[in-house]
Amino acid sequence: MTAHADQPNDPGQLRASDDDRNAVARILQTASDEGRITPVELQERLDTLYRTKTLRELEPLTWDLPGHRELAPRPAATPVSLNKPTAGSTTERIGGTPTSSVAIGIMSGATRAGAWVVPAQFSAVAVMGGVDIDLTKARFAERQVTITALAIMGGIDIVVPEDVTVVVNGVGLMGSFEDNARTPGTVDGPVVRINGLALMGGVDVHLPKGTRTERNG
Image (cartoon, rainbow, N blue to C red; front, side):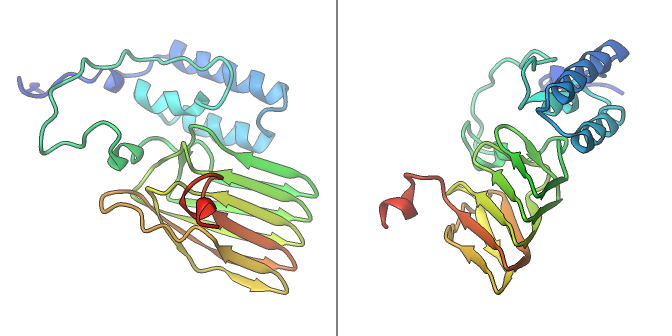
């Protein structure tokens, strides 16, 4: 395969070595031993780890953990093109290897926050417990993702940024499933669909404190 002269080389597309994978596996195992991730999350990330092919796919597995390091040098900056997203564009949120597909709080709690990658289908389950999901620094594996939230005598709190389009279609039964964000998002940005059930519990979708909705009361 011949590389084209007008296409910059992306170091992140270099193939990962066994040493690269082993280094990431050690960080994940340490995080599990310290209680930072659950055994289920550890297994999910290890399954993803051994399916990855490139350095860029490995990096998101430890973004939210101590010991994370960038495995590939960033390519040199290139002039901004009218046909490419600019820095800070919401299209930069799209892409990456999912780091977790489920969050479960059964008489306990679970949190997904920081620089994580949301898969196309994500499930949150709170049974007499709580689940906190923060999407403000997240990336999205695909432009449209779906979060299924099930709260039974428990609560699920979902924080969404203003630049993401959010569509909420959940049902509250002796409980509440509230969309307090109502974000229109941007034309080229991610779309998050949130559905599910709140049975004698609550699901609350809202913006971070201090943003537009909070200021407007």
